[in-house]
Structures are given as structure tokens and as C-alpha cells.
Length: 306
Image (cartoon, rainbow, N blue to C red; front, side, top):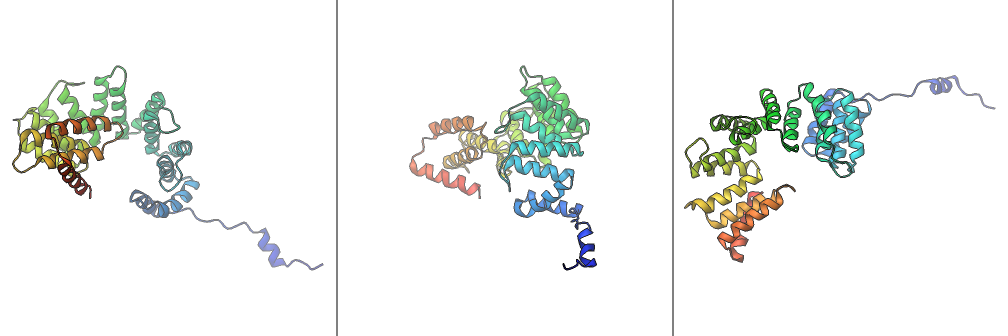
């Protein structure tokens, strides 16, 4: 029987080599690649970091499974990864859990109690978007609690959340949770718009179209709605279409108006689609376009999306 060499025995007895977990720099680069849509390149690094217990990577991998980006969509796996990330200290994972349960998704049933609990934990850690989300839950409650909602928006606004800033402006426009104050609303919308928040441009357009705290001015309203379209806010397209028909601007045609309506409808969320479809149908009743006009409007809408 041939003897096993001492060198081989030593090699067999040695521990298996371990591979170093991705560095913070590698994880940060993978996160950027994921945000930019290069999921294949990002997820190898993200998965390795998640297996090593990195909280940020666990959260990103959870988001990938929730959305089905780079992996097969799996809500149960997403929840497990978000929970691991949250336990590891990733506050955004708490927020993601809250958002998942706030609306439900696929196999995940809506659970507002669980959503509220997760959002509160994230808010207690100072995460402003969770404060905004708590306000939105209060607005969706039965009956709505606008006072509590606006209190949360105030807190989130003070911490710099731009969505809360716009929502707070809306509260002052409507007098919901705060006394009606159009001047305060316009300042809040202007702040949100200055930070590039698409909905704020639309809200400023509505204020100037309707004369909320300012002189009604169709041209200024047009410019704000147009900026909303340029930043991708679908409702701004619907509002711009209706304004063009109502104001009869010499520089804007009915075909253009219908094109903006088509553009808004193309970008509508599932919740918005029925409302936007009704708006566009009503607009067509006024315009009475023939097939050629509809084709021109569709071409205009398609060019807007390029």
C-alpha cells in the first residue's frame, strides 16, 4: 500500500479557503448598477454581500425579488430578505415592508396594521418617507383622519421629505387637517417644485388656473402643466389638454391637446386609468377628431415619450 505523503496530509487537514465578502465600495458600485438597471452585473455582488449579512445588500436583494428585477419575482422571498435587513439595522427595509403590506402585492394580502407597525419603527428611527407614509395611511383610513395625516406630513417636511412638502401644500389648499391657507400652500408647492418634484408643478398649475391665492392666469398655468409633463407626471398631461381646449391658445391646437391627453393616459397608473380614460373621452366629445386628427394626436403623444 502506497503511503500518503506528509504534504498531502497537511493539505487535507488545512481549512478550506474562504472568499472575502464584497467591500463597501463594491457594494456601493453594485447598488448604483442596480439603480441604473444593470441587474445582472449588480446582483452577483449584492447576493454575495447579502449572504455575508450586509444589511443594505439584503434590502436591495429583497427589492429585486419584490419587483422581479434580475430574478424571478417572489414576494415571500422579498419579505424574508426585508425582515433580515431590518433586523440588521437597515431602516429602509422597514419602510419597504410597510409599503408592501400597505397595498398588498400579488400573493401578499393588504395588512394595514402590519404596515403601520413597520412605518412607525422606521419613523422612530428618523426615516422621513415613513412619516409621510403614515400620513397617507391616515388619509386612507375609514373615516380619514386629516389632522393626524397632516401632523405626520409636518414632521416629514421638517426632515426634508419632498413628498410630504407637496402633501402638506395640498392640506392647506383643501383645508384638510389645517386651516385653508393658499399662500402657505403655494410656498410649499414652490419649494417642492424647486427640488424637482413632478407633482408640485402640476399643483402649481392648478393653483394658477383656478386662481387659488393668485390671479387666475392661463399662461402661467400652461407653463407649470408643461413642466409637469416634462418631468413625467401623467396628470399634468390631462390638465394641460383640458386647459388648451378651454383657453383656446393661439399657439396650441386641438390635435396637440388630444396628444397631451393620450400621453397622460399612456402614463397612467392602474388606479388612475379609468379616471384618465373618462377625461380623454370627454375631451374627444368636445374636439370631435376625425381619424386623421387622432393619428396626428397619437404621433404627438409618441414623440413626447421619446
